[in-house]
Amino acid sequence: MPSMDSTILKTPKKSLGYSEHSYPKVLRNLKSEIVSRAETYLATHSARAAAKMVDMLDEDGTTPQASIRMEAAKQILDRIGIAKKEKLDVNVKALHGLFILPPKDKIKKVKPIDDDKENI
Image (cartoon, rainbow, N blue to C red; front, side, top):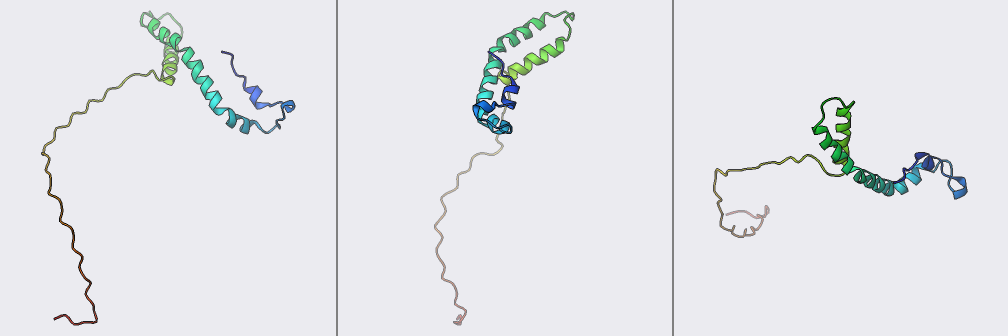
C-alpha cells in the first residue's frame, strides 16, 4: 500500500482550487478515509507482527532491541483488535430469596378540606 505523504495534504495545490489555509478543512473531510487506510495498513502487517511475536519465543537474547520489537508487535495487534483476553468470572450467591409482593390497591382520591367551612 502506498504511503500517504502528509505534505500533500499540508500544501494543497492552488491548481486544484484550494487556498493555502484549507489544510484543516481538507483533513476533516478526508478523516474517515485516512483512518480506513491506516486500519487496512495495520491489518495487512498484523500477520508479520504475530510472526515476530512467535519468533521472539525462541529468542536467546542476541537480537538487538528485542523488547522494543515485541512492544511494537503488541501495539499493532492491539490496534486491529487482537488483544490479550481478560476473562472476568462473576459468581454471585444470593443470601436472600426472591420475595414477590401482591399488587398495590388503587389509591382513592381524597377531597381537599375547605378552610371556609367548619369541621364538625
